[in-house]
Length: 148
Image (cartoon, rainbow, N blue to C red; front, side):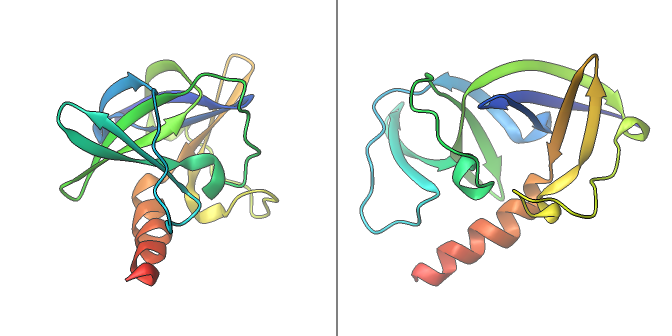
C-alpha cells in the first residue's frame, strides 16, 4: 500500500511524518515563550486569531539546537488538537510503498526506538520516519499530564 510522507530536516538529518497529519506549512516568526512549560514546548505563535503552541521536536529527539537556521512550522492536527511542529526546512513530499520502509535498528543512541516507524533510503539519503502517533500519545501527552 502506498503512503505519502512529508520530509523535513532537523540539522543535517532527514525525517518524515505521514502527510495526513500535516495541515499547513508556515514560516516561524516571533515565538513567544510560555513560563513553566516542559522544555519541548518552544512557545506559541499568533496565527489567524489564535495562539498556536509549538513543539520543539529536537528537544524530544535529543538533537542539538541550531539557532542559526530559520525555522518553519508544520501545522499538525491530532485528536482534534492543532499545534505546530518546529523544524528546519521542508525537503519534499514523497509517495512510497510501505514495503520500502526498513525497520529501525534495535539499538539507537540518540532517540527512543519507539518514536521510529522505520527508515527509507532515497538516493544517498537515509530518512527516519517518525511514528508521530506514538510520540504524541506516549511522550507529549504524558509530559503534559504531569503538569496538571
